[in-house]
Length: 96
Image (cartoon, rainbow, N blue to C red):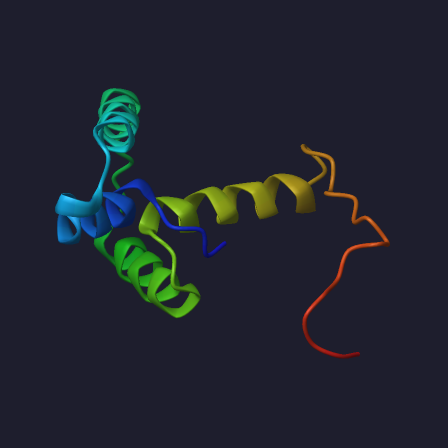
């Protein structure tokens, strides 16, 4: 869940705009425009917002990524959505 979001990519591009190709800038701006056009604000009660902000900070993701993660987990837990199947050939971090 740590892939850079569009806002981060745009900020990084702004920091090195002289090094960016016109094509790369076009792609990023079109992607940003698409996200803005398709953005649907989800408002929560203040106590829920606070927890979302805390969790997003802890997981180092955006608020929206955190909401997507929570909804997916809830759907999988309550069997509305099939659980992701793990490929046994995948490398994993950590130990058991």
